[in-house]
Image (cartoon, rainbow, N blue to C red; front, side, top):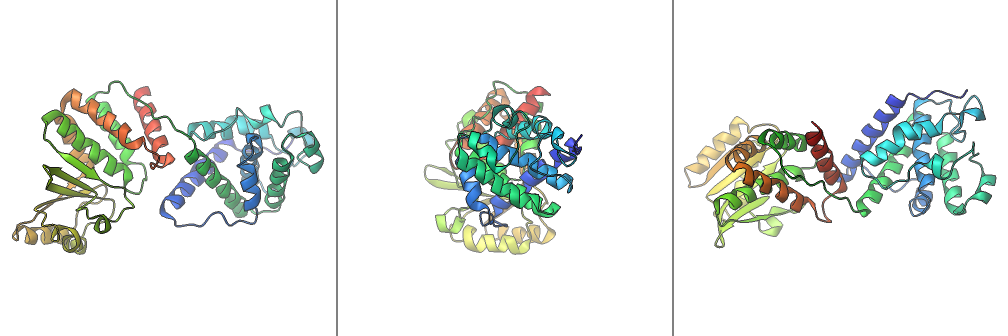
Length: 362
């Protein structure tokens, strides 16, 4: 009969751990790539046999959800400690890989691991890529004696490699012919909910400014930089600098962090004052500025510097309402242009595609 796996729990494990891995890679808050089995992962993720690395996901999930499972017994007719690896893959793993646009096979149990295959060394004789199969077995050796948390850590190491695999692949961005104002606002809301380290709100803000310039012929030059580029080092006044005829009109700092008085004073000293910027905007995504931030901004206004605070969401709602249908179409085209670069993390591209599918299907 074998052990029963809760497929809903398995799906949740995958989603939660992928989010953690993506956040860790984005912030550099965790170190991956130093596991004892890292050499085996390198073999598996350079192998042309995708099934070897994909079947390991299901084995990890089975071990996390049931410590009695024997991760080498992937067919239920192999004993009491076996589990149904094929059904787990069909219901959870393969849809997960496809949903997150991770390069994958149609299914390891259709491609390679058929007919109650035994995941033992002798089976390598029938495999085209013997080194890949043996590498998979070595990871299974580690997984087989692991605790639940250790199995979860092995899964995260696997997911890191799958994210790197996706980063090396080309992700096609979903194109939109026409959206209503309501759909545009819903799209913006979905995108702002994605944890991006500040990149998405910057891209949306730049796209909003491009749509203003397109509709009203403002003659703007809109310069922006990645979120990991230091403003001071690049000489920029903020994340976005809007110029006309070479003269700075205003600069924008897009932030997910709290804006307090100390933050305003620091920005004034490092960016606003050195470049004699008269108009400066803080676009915030979460918390509005503190009372101390507003008070400091008022003090600088008396010195000729107009510093203001706006919610990215509220500002974009105003922009999209006023630029009319042509401007809104330009807005989405601008987002795609900004996303469609090799530097954009695959996570952000996938988030765009998921948001578009959700809006269009609704």
